[in-house]
Image 1 (cartoon, one colour):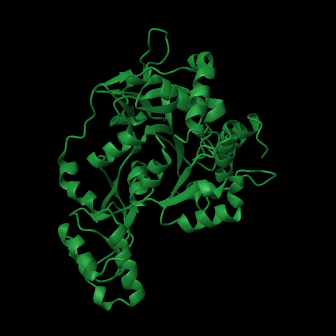
Image 2 (tube, one colour):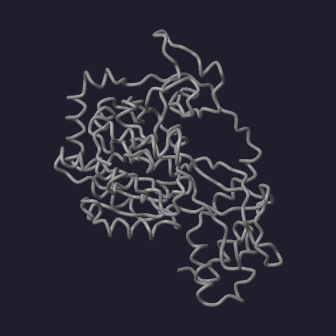
Image 3 (cartoon, rainbow, N blue to C red):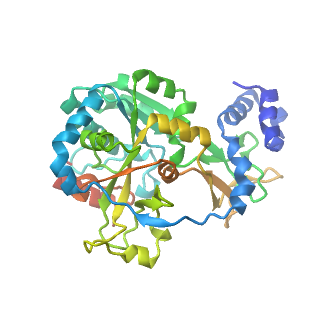
Length: 410
């Protein structure tokens, strides 16, 4: 662990020496807590604060991007699956689960993956995902390395839960956990906020931070040693998604493109999903709130929506290209938030209005930094059951119905 002098050198580089203001008054335990935070926090996001705030963040010129459709996949499935199975058996594919979030919106104060979506029997979100991955293990006869990204807040609960549940039948030798990097929260003057005299205000660095977090955890060397060339990245909240899907992997490899994204046809022009498209000729994702009315309703020559392919946060990335992107650094997005903090008088303040910035990187920027991306259409009812809300759209209730319709006992 770093010492006080090391910490001061790091903080001086970014003009944040005030973080150590009360250091000499702290007990040994609190000193250790503060130094360990300083060591793992990514302060480099602060370098871009002014340039990001002053930059013209308008988007480029969008164009629709076609996809390998459900019909195309059905016609070529044998070839795609064969290619994918060969890659998996050769150890060229691994999976990365983004599981840093809590189940707060579900009224659940534990990691989201620990939520029991079963009705008459136990069926946890993590269990659904492992079961889906086990389908591929059974098909290929090969264990797929699985890297699970947690957060500082939920790492202990997550790792203990997997151990307690015997990894839901998955071989633990092929599972690695790593903690997502944290970014500091700052006030509107760029000064890092403190939660207490020994605790810096931090937040996870966004879903685009998974690869840099994996690298910082020292797992890239292992990935390269194993000969892994492709990483299938997916989020915790879609209980039906197919992971390390041989058809998807095979289609991307056969296409010769640099990456792939699973997509579903939008249910309606106004569905609130990001759409895989081209931006200034490069693959990109346009968020639903960024789309003009013309883009939302534009039809192609077949009379279908031109911008029709919604992303489900299930991507296939090439490891070499990810290293290249990591060197260049992803854009940092600045979000204004209400951030609880300790004021100069040592009082803990819970603000009623936004009082500072949080920093995050987004996986959609990772897509935009690819030279090419294969949109791979999947059947919505078979692969898209997001659990974002307790009730209503994309909820526990709707996911349960979709699980049942796919023959999963709940």
